[in-house]
Length: 381
Image 1 (tube, rainbow, N blue to C red):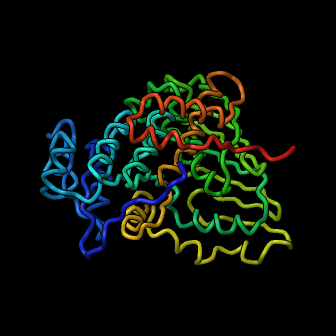
Image 2 (spheres, one colour; image 1 turned 60 degrees about the horizontal axis):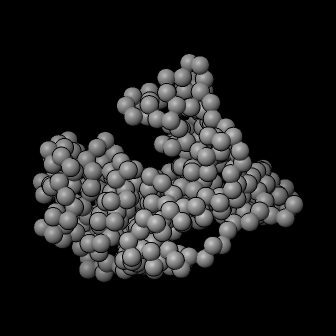
């Protein structure tokens, strides 16, 4: 699936009209973000319980717009330009397929799908429909992170990138009973950012999970994963969701060791860089060129990029074909933790493609059958 083109929405000077699907806690954040943006207008809210949609509108002051239990019916009545999917992961496949079949582009919450075969199927569906499907990897949208990426490129070839993530949230609810709470609910953010920072793809991973004896989670809430990346670099993630004291930023604490120096980012403030004489002088200064690329932080940045992509046809960050690899990192880490062995990403992708072919409808299957089985290969040892 190499195609990245998609149908655009002509800019007639009016805001992009969007329907939000899902009315849970995260939907409230999206509703407030939509209300604050001059580039979009809320056309309606869909939830299997319409009363929940009405409550979400009332609590956020998002306005008096139509609500309904089904996307197809509400889209027919409101004629939106796009869909924002804020449902639970298990609903991402049916909601996104329904929207694409209606000819509507989709901006969805992470993860892109509940499984890797479903992710490949959705990438094929977006391609077959000629519509944009973008995943909101909202933690990429941070001005210091954009500047950090520019500076990292000036340090030469990367060697090791690490993330430390230590928090102690007491969410309650489904996270407390998940089998892999940290990996499945949070780690996709740093894993996705690591791909972006290194400009590399995962080759393999060895991952260990464990649960401290004081943990309030049923599943393992602490993880260490070591990824081999294309080009020979390594990405190491270590973290815990039951770590009281000296907690990190929600963005984690990052360190890059590269050919011509090292970089550290605490997740909130400008990164610090110590470079050798071989690195350009700009490497040690956060320049305006980096911060200008991030128009807003978090989901506001993702929403702005989605609108820009639909108006211009430019491929955004988080486009489904690219985002498949971030989900592949999570899938590989979970399998490694469960089996105790090193897992190769290409093996997972091959198995996922077989599964996607078996479950897809004819338009998607035609796209999937054309996928070359090209695999990320490790650097020569």
